[in-house]
Image 1 (tube, rainbow over the protein chains, first blue to last red):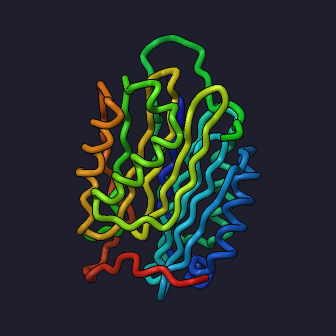
Image 2 (image 1 turned 180 degrees about the vertical axis):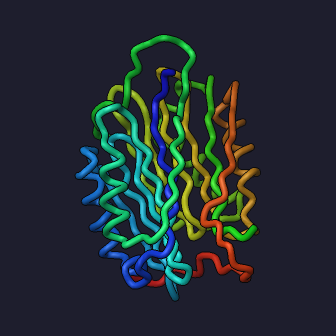
Length: 130
Length: 130
Protein backbone atom coordinates (compact mmCIF):
# COMPACT_ATOMS: atom_id res chain seq x y z
CA UNK A 1 0.00 0.00 0.00
CA UNK A 2 1.42 3.34 -1.04
CA UNK A 3 0.55 6.25 1.19
CA UNK A 4 1.85 9.76 1.68
CA UNK A 5 1.19 10.49 5.33
CA UNK A 6 0.96 8.75 8.67
CA UNK A 7 -1.43 10.34 11.17
CA UNK A 8 -1.63 9.41 14.84
CA UNK A 9 -4.83 10.58 16.54
CA UNK A 10 -4.08 10.39 20.23
CA UNK A 11 -6.47 10.72 23.15
CA UNK A 12 -4.66 11.46 26.40
CA UNK A 13 -6.86 11.20 29.49
CA UNK A 14 -6.14 11.77 33.16
CA UNK A 15 -3.26 14.13 32.45
CA UNK A 16 -1.70 16.51 34.93
CA UNK A 17 -4.19 19.39 34.86
CA UNK A 18 -1.73 22.14 35.75
CA UNK A 19 0.68 21.02 33.10
CA UNK A 20 -1.87 20.89 30.31
CA UNK A 21 -2.97 24.42 31.18
CA UNK A 22 0.59 25.78 30.88
CA UNK A 23 0.96 27.20 27.39
CA UNK A 24 4.71 27.86 27.46
CA UNK A 25 5.49 24.43 28.88
CA UNK A 26 3.28 22.72 26.28
CA UNK A 27 5.01 24.57 23.47
CA UNK A 28 8.42 23.45 24.75
CA UNK A 29 7.20 19.86 25.06
CA UNK A 30 5.82 19.74 21.55
CA UNK A 31 8.94 21.31 20.05
CA UNK A 32 11.06 18.75 21.90
CA UNK A 33 8.78 15.93 20.72
CA UNK A 34 9.27 17.08 17.12
CA UNK A 35 13.05 16.91 17.62
CA UNK A 36 12.82 13.46 19.16
CA UNK A 37 10.86 12.21 16.17
CA UNK A 38 13.54 13.47 13.81
CA UNK A 39 11.17 15.94 12.15
CA UNK A 40 11.96 19.59 11.41
CA UNK A 41 10.05 22.52 12.86
CA UNK A 42 9.02 25.32 10.50
CA UNK A 43 6.78 27.36 12.78
CA UNK A 44 4.66 27.06 15.90
CA UNK A 45 1.68 28.91 17.28
CA UNK A 46 0.16 28.39 20.72
CA UNK A 47 -2.79 30.03 22.50
CA UNK A 48 -4.01 30.05 26.07
CA UNK A 49 -7.74 30.26 26.56
CA UNK A 50 -9.58 31.85 29.45
CA UNK A 51 -10.26 30.50 31.99
CA UNK A 52 -8.42 27.34 30.91
CA UNK A 53 -7.27 25.31 27.94
CA UNK A 54 -4.51 25.54 25.35
CA UNK A 55 -4.37 25.05 21.59
CA UNK A 56 -1.08 24.72 19.80
CA UNK A 57 0.26 23.64 16.44
CA UNK A 58 3.80 23.01 15.26
CA UNK A 59 4.08 23.02 11.48
CA UNK A 60 6.94 20.77 10.43
CA UNK A 61 8.54 20.06 7.07
CA UNK A 62 6.81 16.71 7.29
CA UNK A 63 3.23 18.02 8.11
CA UNK A 64 2.25 18.95 11.70
CA UNK A 65 1.94 18.21 15.39
CA UNK A 66 -1.06 19.71 17.21
CA UNK A 67 -2.49 19.68 20.71
CA UNK A 68 -5.77 20.90 22.21
CA UNK A 69 -6.23 20.62 25.95
CA UNK A 70 -9.19 20.64 28.32
CA UNK A 71 -7.58 20.85 31.79
CA UNK A 72 -11.04 20.74 33.39
CA UNK A 73 -11.35 17.15 32.12
CA UNK A 74 -7.66 16.24 32.29
CA UNK A 75 -7.86 15.58 28.55
CA UNK A 76 -5.64 16.40 25.54
CA UNK A 77 -6.25 15.71 21.86
CA UNK A 78 -2.86 15.20 20.25
CA UNK A 79 -2.23 14.78 16.52
CA UNK A 80 1.06 13.68 15.03
CA UNK A 81 0.81 13.87 11.25
CA UNK A 82 4.02 13.09 9.37
CA UNK A 83 5.16 12.12 5.92
CA UNK A 84 8.24 10.20 4.96
CA UNK A 85 9.21 6.89 6.44
CA UNK A 86 12.11 8.15 8.55
CA UNK A 87 10.11 10.07 11.15
CA UNK A 88 9.76 8.29 14.48
CA UNK A 89 6.27 9.39 15.52
CA UNK A 90 6.02 6.75 18.19
CA UNK A 91 9.07 8.09 20.03
CA UNK A 92 7.46 11.54 20.10
CA UNK A 93 4.22 10.04 21.36
CA UNK A 94 5.93 8.08 24.12
CA UNK A 95 7.79 11.22 25.24
CA UNK A 96 4.59 13.30 25.39
CA UNK A 97 2.62 10.59 27.14
CA UNK A 98 5.20 10.47 29.91
CA UNK A 99 5.70 14.24 30.17
CA UNK A 100 1.96 14.94 30.34
CA UNK A 101 1.57 12.12 32.86
CA UNK A 102 -1.38 10.67 30.97
CA UNK A 103 -3.17 7.95 32.90
CA UNK A 104 -5.08 6.55 29.95
CA UNK A 105 -4.27 6.78 26.28
CA UNK A 106 -5.79 5.64 23.03
CA UNK A 107 -4.14 5.90 19.63
CA UNK A 108 -5.65 5.59 16.19
CA UNK A 109 -3.21 5.39 13.29
CA UNK A 110 -4.51 6.54 9.93
CA UNK A 111 -2.71 6.35 6.61
CA UNK A 112 -3.31 9.52 4.60
CA UNK A 113 -3.10 9.87 0.83
CA UNK A 114 -3.37 6.25 -0.16
CA UNK A 115 -2.43 6.02 -3.82
CA UNK A 116 -3.26 3.07 -5.98
CA UNK A 117 -0.36 3.23 -8.37
CA UNK A 118 2.99 1.57 -7.79
CA UNK A 119 5.28 4.59 -7.73
CA UNK A 120 8.13 5.46 -5.43
CA UNK A 121 6.46 8.21 -3.44
CA UNK A 122 8.00 11.59 -2.93
CA UNK A 123 7.45 13.33 0.35
CA UNK A 124 7.73 16.94 1.39
CA UNK A 125 10.95 18.45 0.10
CA UNK A 126 12.78 21.45 1.55
CA UNK A 127 11.07 24.76 2.24
CA UNK A 128 11.50 27.54 -0.26
CA UNK A 129 11.34 31.20 0.53
CA UNK A 130 7.91 32.56 -0.37
CA UNK B 1 -22.20 9.98 23.90
CA UNK B 2 -20.41 13.00 25.28
CA UNK B 3 -17.46 14.19 23.26
CA UNK B 4 -15.38 17.35 23.13
CA UNK B 5 -14.26 17.54 19.52
CA UNK B 6 -15.38 16.59 16.05
CA UNK B 7 -12.58 15.83 13.60
CA UNK B 8 -13.05 15.43 9.85
CA UNK B 9 -10.13 13.69 8.13
CA UNK B 10 -10.58 14.47 4.47
CA UNK B 11 -8.79 12.99 1.49
CA UNK B 12 -9.13 15.16 -1.62
CA UNK B 13 -7.90 13.48 -4.80
CA UNK B 14 -7.71 14.71 -8.39
CA UNK B 15 -7.58 18.36 -7.36
CA UNK B 16 -6.50 21.22 -9.57
CA UNK B 17 -2.71 20.92 -9.37
CA UNK B 18 -1.92 24.61 -9.92
CA UNK B 19 -4.38 25.66 -7.28
CA UNK B 20 -3.07 23.29 -4.61
CA UNK B 21 0.44 24.58 -5.23
CA UNK B 22 -0.60 28.20 -4.68
CA UNK B 23 0.18 29.05 -1.06
CA UNK B 24 -1.53 32.46 -0.93
CA UNK B 25 -4.69 31.17 -2.59
CA UNK B 26 -4.84 28.17 -0.24
CA UNK B 27 -4.50 30.42 2.79
CA UNK B 28 -7.39 32.60 1.56
CA UNK B 29 -9.53 29.53 0.90
CA UNK B 30 -8.93 28.05 4.34
CA UNK B 31 -9.61 31.36 6.08
CA UNK B 32 -12.85 31.70 4.13
CA UNK B 33 -13.79 28.11 4.97
CA UNK B 34 -13.31 28.89 8.66
CA UNK B 35 -15.69 31.85 8.32
CA UNK B 36 -18.25 29.75 6.48
CA UNK B 37 -18.20 27.20 9.28
CA UNK B 38 -18.88 29.90 11.85
CA UNK B 39 -15.56 29.32 13.62
CA UNK B 40 -13.16 32.07 14.67
CA UNK B 41 -9.59 32.38 13.39
CA UNK B 42 -6.83 33.01 15.92
CA UNK B 43 -3.78 32.61 13.72
CA UNK B 44 -2.62 31.00 10.51
CA UNK B 45 0.70 29.82 9.18
CA UNK B 46 1.33 28.57 5.63
CA UNK B 47 4.47 27.32 3.87
CA UNK B 48 5.38 26.65 0.27
CA UNK B 49 7.78 23.81 -0.35
CA UNK B 50 10.27 23.54 -3.16
CA UNK B 51 9.69 22.41 -5.83
CA UNK B 52 6.04 21.92 -4.94
CA UNK B 53 3.59 21.38 -2.11
CA UNK B 54 2.02 23.52 0.60
CA UNK B 55 1.40 23.03 4.31
CA UNK B 56 -0.91 25.32 6.20
CA UNK B 57 -2.71 25.49 9.51
CA UNK B 58 -5.37 27.87 10.78
CA UNK B 59 -5.68 27.78 14.55
CA UNK B 60 -9.24 28.65 15.54
CA UNK B 61 -10.91 29.24 18.89
CA UNK B 62 -12.55 25.87 18.32
CA UNK B 63 -9.34 23.86 17.46
CA UNK B 64 -7.85 23.92 13.92
CA UNK B 65 -8.11 23.54 10.16
CA UNK B 66 -5.04 22.16 8.35
CA UNK B 67 -4.07 21.28 4.82
CA UNK B 68 -1.08 19.51 3.29
CA UNK B 69 -0.87 19.29 -0.47
CA UNK B 70 1.00 17.11 -2.96
CA UNK B 71 0.37 18.80 -6.32
CA UNK B 72 2.40 16.11 -8.08
CA UNK B 73 -0.33 13.63 -7.11
CA UNK B 74 -3.27 16.06 -7.20
CA UNK B 75 -3.83 15.21 -3.55
CA UNK B 76 -4.61 17.23 -0.39
CA UNK B 77 -4.96 16.02 3.19
CA UNK B 78 -7.45 18.31 4.89
CA UNK B 79 -8.32 18.25 8.59
CA UNK B 80 -11.23 20.12 10.13
CA UNK B 81 -11.08 19.72 13.89
CA UNK B 82 -13.70 21.67 15.83
CA UNK B 83 -15.29 21.74 19.24
CA UNK B 84 -18.71 22.98 20.15
CA UNK B 85 -21.91 21.92 18.45
CA UNK B 86 -22.53 25.18 16.57
CA UNK B 87 -19.68 24.91 14.06
CA UNK B 88 -20.77 23.84 10.58
CA UNK B 89 -17.76 21.80 9.51
CA UNK B 90 -19.61 20.24 6.62
CA UNK B 91 -20.28 23.63 5.02
CA UNK B 92 -16.56 24.39 5.17
CA UNK B 93 -15.78 21.01 3.66
CA UNK B 94 -18.25 21.45 0.83
CA UNK B 95 -16.79 24.89 0.05
CA UNK B 96 -13.22 23.57 -0.06
CA UNK B 97 -14.14 20.51 -2.11
CA UNK B 98 -15.65 22.75 -4.78
CA UNK B 99 -12.92 25.39 -4.70
CA UNK B 100 -10.11 22.84 -4.97
CA UNK B 101 -12.04 21.07 -7.73
CA UNK B 102 -11.53 17.69 -6.09
CA UNK B 103 -12.57 14.81 -8.31
CA UNK B 104 -12.66 12.20 -5.56
CA UNK B 105 -13.13 12.69 -1.85
CA UNK B 106 -13.25 10.52 1.22
CA UNK B 107 -14.18 11.73 4.69
CA UNK B 108 -13.66 10.05 8.04
CA UNK B 109 -15.40 11.65 11.00
CA UNK B 110 -13.83 11.01 14.38
CA UNK B 111 -15.20 12.06 17.75
CA UNK B 112 -12.39 13.31 19.98
CA UNK B 113 -12.39 13.37 23.77
CA UNK B 114 -15.18 10.93 24.46
CA UNK B 115 -16.09 11.24 28.12
CA UNK B 116 -18.08 8.65 29.98
CA UNK B 117 -19.79 10.87 32.48
CA UNK B 118 -23.10 12.62 31.89
CA UNK B 119 -22.03 16.24 32.17
CA UNK B 120 -22.91 19.23 30.07
CA UNK B 121 -19.61 19.69 28.27
CA UNK B 122 -17.80 22.97 28.14
CA UNK B 123 -15.92 23.83 24.98
CA UNK B 124 -13.14 26.27 24.26
CA UNK B 125 -13.89 29.65 25.81
CA UNK B 126 -12.47 32.99 24.68
CA UNK B 127 -8.76 33.63 24.18
CA UNK B 128 -6.88 35.42 26.90
CA UNK B 129 -3.78 37.44 26.39
CA UNK B 130 -0.70 35.42 27.26
